[in-house]
Length: 318
Image (tube, rainbow, N blue to C red; front, top):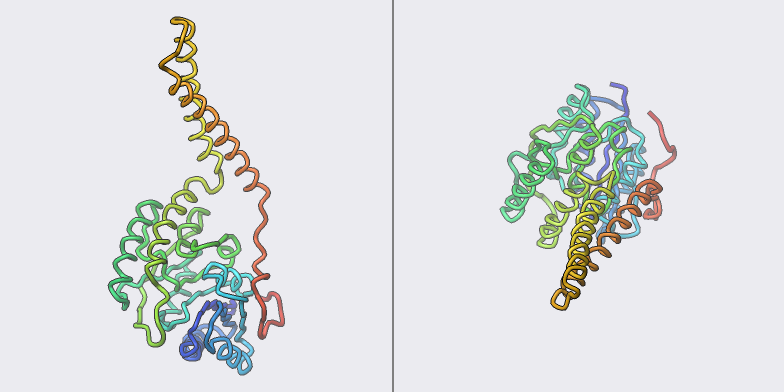
């Protein structure tokens, strides 16, 4: 196989894991192809993670390191890695050694079968119950809302064709729903069961705050799935409904004024009608502005988050 493979690995405070992860990737990727690169992204680590990454880069020119100015989150880290990679196939892993690089050949095989994105499924998770139960619930609701039959939407172990990563727009915590976002663009998605290992070093970054944000992300996903390309339909539908109700109330008040000569006891209803008409106009206007923003928006320049690069000599190769 001559196709270049890029490994993109975001990490935060994983000093003890990086060297072993590098060795396991090399051991499992080299039998497939010699044409690889490993891109580590230091997402605001406070330990010696960047030094460990840089040490590996000095020893092996296939290792490249990007240091971000702070902890900007996984969406930014992944996007920076994608933008600075040059392989036709991109594989992402977490930096905590829980993703088993022995599974790499299975991902490559699926990509060669014609799939655009292959997502891992941690069928037997080696995580505490406080992490597994919320994950099961979120995955179930995500599958129900999106219609994409996938067991583990948030698994960090994935393989992509370059065309997929070039069309992803990640921000906030949307990295959790990459298969859903890709499927909405009609990319071919597959899922494979993978071996999941217990965390060997450090502590999980998963906490109660992330659990709460997961539910908010589901609402965001619901909106994106239905109105990503046409936000005017969302605001416009509600606006037209509000405007219509306000208009009907206005007609009713006008009728009473003509037939009875007064609306003494209908002042609150009149106020409600006027309020609904104003709200409807504002919502429709908001929808039109949203459509204009979508039309003229520019992709964010994620290079501004980078303060240092190691071993990057070429912009792109195949």
